[in-house]
Each structure stands twice: as structure tokens, then as C-alpha cells.
Image (cartoon, rainbow, N blue to C red; front, side):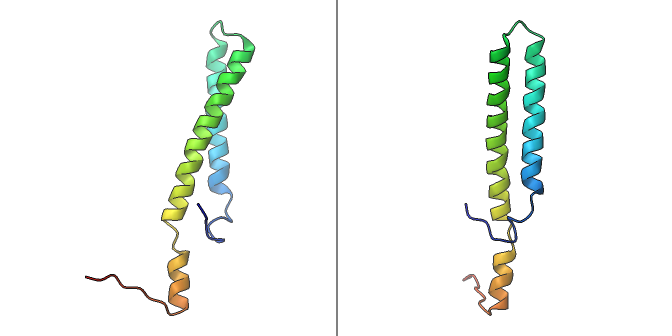
Length: 87
């Protein structure tokens, strides 16, 4: 997915993906600490949750940014290229 330069400037959506993934991985690590799971398995489970949640949210954020981008329409209006849909 290629984003326009104006949409890809803001780091806030990507920071939120990292924050949410980190919090969920940390909670998973803490909850597994209450059981009799060895530390390497706890770390592996936390990393797996981080990667799974991060990949899912990143895919969602990128598809939403691409779908809701209005900069291409603004550029077409500036250059005088208006495309109308046939009825």
C-alpha cells in the first residue's frame, strides 16, 4: 500500500499501534507470570502477542489511511481534472 506524502507524515497512528501492542504484550507477560510457566515461554508468548496485535493494527491503520485519503481528490481539482461517474 502506497500512501500519499501528506498522509504518511503523521507518526501518531503508528505510535498508537506500538503503544497498544506493547500494553497488550506486557499484560500477557504479567498474566502468564501468575501461572507456572517458565520465563522463556512467557517472553515468547508476549512477543507473539506483540507481533500479532501489531501486524493486525498496522494493516488496519494503513488500509484506513489509504481509504480515507482526500489528498488525491484535492490534487485532481487543482489540476482541473474532474472525473464524474456515469449515471
